[in-house]
Image 1: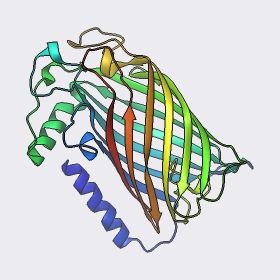
Image 2: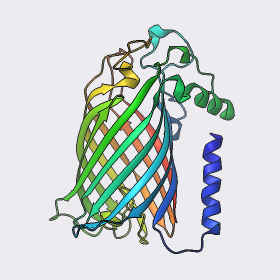
Image 3: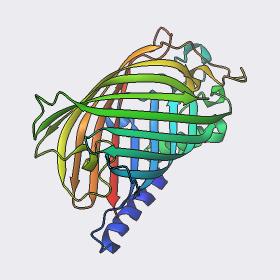
Length: 310
């Protein structure tokens, strides 16, 4: 939790110290927590933190508007519904921590399509420090003690690749204030393997920026336009493998694991705002039921993003 405050302080110092009008780079933080939607629920994907930096790079393709290169450090934490007991019999999801570093590149086409590819290397298990992070956060805010981390998913090397493609569609009903996009994603690796597809729609409170200049997919870097819009993105996910639920695919040494529910409905909706060099966002995330257990269900959490264009 302390790292979040230090990073936000760094952003404000950058804002104060920077006199350049160039926006060829971006630095930011994304923090996820189910407490951002409800103080009652603390379960499943319970906390996430990402620190990132990205910049524009050269691309000579005449169909490409711009290309970005980015770096990210992140940690995700997962817990069951009931965290006040170490009893494995009532755990409806494993405890798990995931720590990673990422390198990514996104290509923004002039016709408002986007192709993104990222690679991650990290650790799942005690080496990801999920227990320590959650304990520190709960101690800081005076929240209840968490039991059960002794049953967490054990250490496994996390090697991941992820690709995203988005294309603007339904041009006949799009306008300066409403547009529609088809989005598909695929993940392959030792932790997550699956695919998803769905629709994205932006509804602007002012004229929408073109996708290659919008913060919808991280295209704000290199752009000086302002934005304020609501967006909604329902999708269908087919999950082949999830090591935070099933444990390592190579060593069966995790004490609590479950069988996946492969087909899921996911959804997200939120607001994104940009003015001058600042990017702000709040997103409500819903994830469909992920595994077979009598008390396991779909869940939701909030995501807050703050970044500064350099």
